[in-house]
Image 1: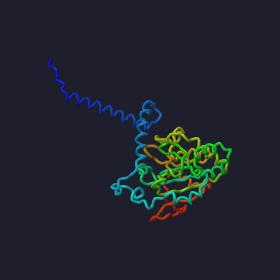
Image 2: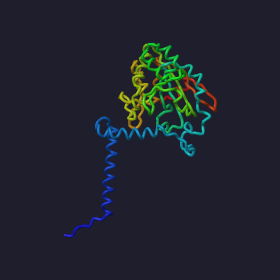
Image 3: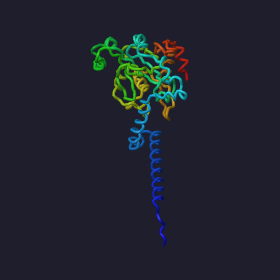
Image 4: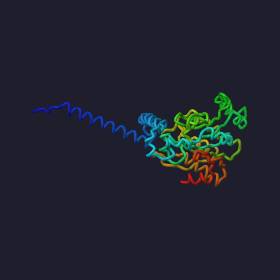
Length: 301
């Protein structure tokens, strides 16, 4: 019987077919794991680090190539620096804020901003200066004692939010590159209209999330990992204010910053649980303070 000759070319071809099939099967398995999270833990443990690495890279990448300007929305162009809101522009507006105020930002230049639905890209909670937190919480408060570890120089203005580094208490000027060349395009803020006791509970709940990793899997109801507007969701839920707006994002129903802001703005009008503080942007290099109605028109889905 005549034996078929197996050539090196055929071996390489078969090897490539096997490898390609294996890679495709692996990717399909990861995709299935994404669609059905927490079902196959072995695959989940493989998928999450890969997913985190990809999304972290996107989140940290800034659009620096001027040739991209023809292909992206004007909000994100790097040649529009005159309309970026600086820390100096914000000084007088920050004086209007109090511990527990919720604010939303829209920043250009970050690649990730192109993918987040809606105008508003980030949500955070204002904590304030050392004096503000002491006056509101009291020197004997456990939360105030914890915040003291963050007031190194005594002139810091603190916030709590969730970024690619997870939930952290940090300085306000770390947002949107404010400490250097600002990427900030817009900022708006609201106040929760409730008792001091409930506001303390809201802040304490936010503080409990500190140290948790960023929720790259975007599962809102899970409390193990937290994305930015999810921090607002869990903290408000503690005082029986439940954000029920959702958007479809990467096959997940999530609460985007736009969703959270829409809930707050609508609630302010119908249930009177929030009050509008400010909404500012720059036009032609000059600060413009917009009205609440301007904001509602922008976020109305």
